[in-house]
Length: 575
Ligand code: ADP
Ligand code: MG
Image (cartoon, rainbow, N blue to C red; front, side):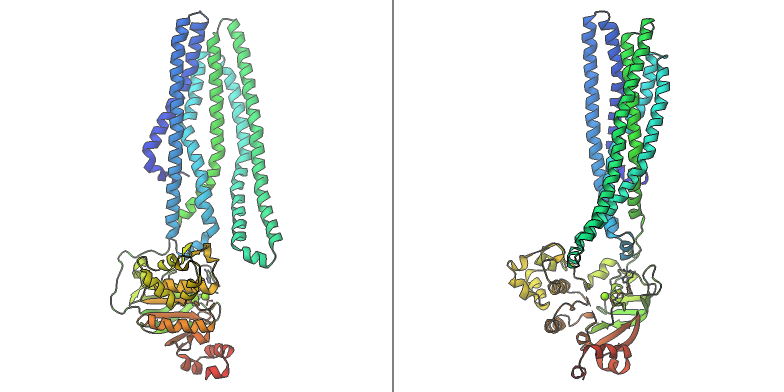
């Protein structure tokens, strides 16, 4: 929590104003009972109407001042807290954007979302309370005690008995409720998790008729959260009347003893009334402090979760001095690369060496889980290698700026990701300043123009969230068009043709060939028919290279490749 408060710095001026206002409010409220006792003692009891009018006017002014301070204070503290929340969200978001894929795997998407929204909200709420009460409550408490003592020392003994009891009661309740509040946050996390999984996996859930068990799972998490929240509220609800009872009993005893002292002529009526009010103020401020003590641990739990996000230092950073290269447009080389995912027992890739030359098509083939996607994700530096190096245009990717590196690459990921917006917007994602002609051309090459023009609004058709209103093959072709419009030096296709029928696949690759004449093209696939005419084929098997060559040489020399070929093609096709 303390650590996060450094982001309050831009609001220092506002916070100082808030504190001044709260100080003003406290002072005014402490002054009011004294004024009142003056009016009662010197005005009412002595029948001095002029005095009553004069001091009544003062009282009104002081009350007005106190209200103004209260209003300004709470307005400013809301503004500050909301602004702080906005800043913090943007800081968290920026930090998360700089994460490498490793770090995403660590915290998890669902939790990242809860942390940026709900957790920051919790802190925001407590911040308002802190700014309001941090100065106000102690002043009211200590000031109240001093003022009460100035009215009547003997009566203060009642407070000496009552206040410790009050604190003990509050302490008792707090010790019960704080753990409940902390549990609440975790249970909310759980509800979010189940809900997210259900919403994203709705198709699978329906297909496998799991609605009932999913509903049960959700209901469990939901009622767990509800029960805990009800428990917390029950305790809070019990606390309120109990406190009122306590305060009323205190009032009665004050009036009782004060009455005795007034009879003895040792206390004036006005002072008794003032004393009563000070006692109330003291108790209220104690209750406010105790509410803060209950809320702060809850926010503390959130603060820890946010700090976790901020404390991750991204593994992948730009070098201090980025190198740029000019010649050798698009040459990609792997030199003895070994890479493992964190926590994995075996490296996902070991001793990979090959080069993909400009103007050539390099195909990477291998079974599922052989490390193909892993291999190509090293080129845009989504991950860093353990040993060896990945070179683009003769420079290690770790020595280039990420922006410069990725600008050279047109990447088509294994699962096509589209964004909400029109089809044209999605293709233009590849290059901001692409003209309409370029977009249409890219769609043409990607064999997408046909289905786009058959849609009602053509290139202006809206794509639903996650592209759910398109087929898998249509999504793939749009993400290919997006890479094409970029006109990069290096094209990477990760099983980008897998959802296309063989005819469209062949047509697309023929069109691509013309389009990508001078570029380096890397195609990842499991289909032998897709790689047969590639200039170079790299065969991957369990993260190792089983052979490099063209279709013909591999067929003779590489056992793994031969097996793939025989399992997919008929005798005639092979010959
Ligand atoms: P392919 O694309 O050839 O099907 P991948 O490169 O996706 O294979 O996966 C290679 C291996 O790496 C698999 O054993 C897989 O379990 C593992 N793997 C892939 N992604 C991750 C990840 N994010 N974290 C940990 N292990 C992973
Ligand atoms: Mg893959």
